[in-house]
Image (tube, rainbow, N blue to C red):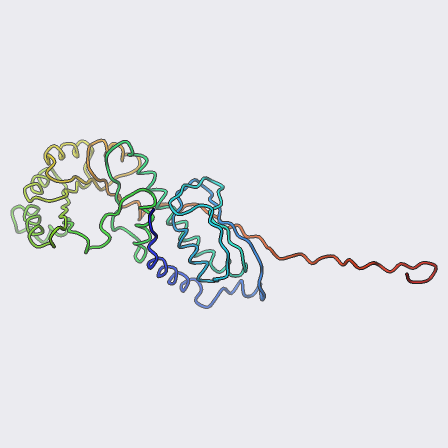
Length: 305
């Protein structure tokens, strides 16, 4: 079971509601001066992996703690088109106030989880791990990485503090050295905290050789073709884990996996996942006034009876 990042959800929901309800809901206040009993259903308009339900429920509860929920599909579960994910009962005014923010979380995060699941399914016959990256929406990284886990993927670094990853712009500051990648690896291995993996990004086979000489723990092959990846793996000979990144799509991910890397990292999981299509269907629960059961007066022979 993947635990939701509770503190991050609370913070994100608080900020989102402050953004959407700075002075309340003008439309709802104008139309409904008194409580409007209602029932709502959040329905999937496509097949998807549910993610963000915890954030959606917290959104509704923050607006109105008296709302009643019936969860039909939990985070991490697959849902088919037409399936009800969540049912909400209570004051319709509260449901209307929370609707857009709740759906924003649910649609975006379910989109991330669903895309991740598609990548994982595409390579399921290969011993390779699908990872995300730090290419996330500012302020939503913890939630997006949670969605990746729900989709079956694995989290890469959560922050710059989590590991050493030497990239091209780090190397740009080492151009005065004859073999910058080897030098960077050795510096990182010497100065990084004990036990922290050193990853180095390479763009050519010559740089692969430098990374091996520098004893990198993980060599990240950036924007290489499957054929070049195979060649690089032969050069590495198991002396480091091999990660592939850059230009990986659903069309070529199987070919990349077949080349033999240990890991494939995909920025698109978080920066380009299409939002899942969901809708909230609302219906009034207000009781209709009962017809009067009083007998009509009947005039018989000129008298009321």
